[in-house]
Image (tube, rainbow, N blue to C red):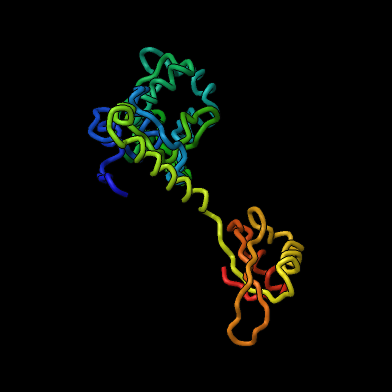
Length: 267
């Protein structure tokens, strides 16, 4: 793309540079944009679902000890152990979202310790009662005898396209560049998981071929098959090329149905 320079930076630095105006656009996790953007209106989510990096920010507590029978955020809050002198200790790298979430959910006696990475060991080491961290598959939590609790998810996250509102308004050509990037992203995302299947079939007319193809439930494509005549250079027999677009999960079934019509198929 013309008029585009790409920098590879740490996610939190991308967000900070968007806020200071050093960058116009950035791709980061929604969790990062929210944590470091802290509600700044100059940070604009241009595309909120780029389709990768899916995870969620969640509270996790030990499976053992005083937490063994605690299974919800409310039960955690109502535990009598938390007092002004001995508050709930949360280890997290999210020092904006963490306190905000706890306050919104009525926690009065809670304190946060800042840490980056390897938070799962904090409860076992005795330096925290629970953690607030990103969870993807949950395998690391299970390996460290931690569990998520009902109501403990702070936000769902995946990669998003973020922009500086100031840049979009003031920089010449910035809006046009964003529009082109969005068009390309949308084209890629909509095409993901779709396959074009091409097959050749002999028949007396396009209508006859279309009728045979549409008789199979998986061969209708997005709007219907594209059928065009093939100009054979050898035997002069009339053949037609069939092109359909099918979702990935229906690919095998579609190929099988085409082969049942005695077609030569190329996915």
